[in-house]
Length: 269
Image (cartoon, rainbow, N blue to C red; front, side, top):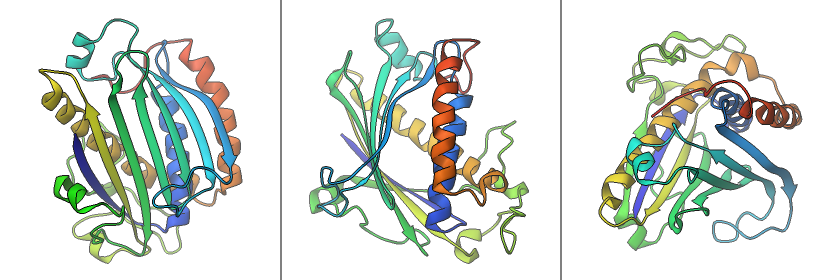
């Protein structure tokens, strides 16, 4: 088992981040769907009086159930080991505003031998210095590794158009960015996303290497998505959660059509 906490400081408040994250997930899903691969949305609905999350602090929110149809979007080692047709992941997520729990499994093949749990906590007016926002036990804290993601200063793949160091958010008042230097220590508004990843991949002989590969892929995806959230802010700035729900409904239908037509899109690994 690996436990890694990624801390991602963002130049916005929590309410803006919640809109930007949902917008980013919807748009990124379209960019990664096509040619038989990508995202299939089964459910996207609100709930109340659900299973208590994070020591009973969260019981209502938005529930989503998705299937990820994968082939080219997993590490080559896993494609080599897994039989054809087995690379489908289910994602169940409980989004409770400031806190979100996402559980990804592979029930068709690996079953209980693979679980990827992502717990996200959004902390307002925070620059990434909280020690235990996920309320981990002493044993879990010993296992936890902390990694900071800097959307402006971390390396960006050549050709990626989402570069916070060259992007100014002109719709913000006052404008934000471009981001550079020690921006995380000076920017306002500010908040930090704490993403706790708990990964189990029980496959004798390759467990350690594959867990490391998956965790590095998660870091890359988080970096990319949060750069997109910032760089797309001029597009989603001013949208409400009601606007986002309408966009998600529209995206669901478009995803179904795109997944069954055209060519494979997005990042291939």
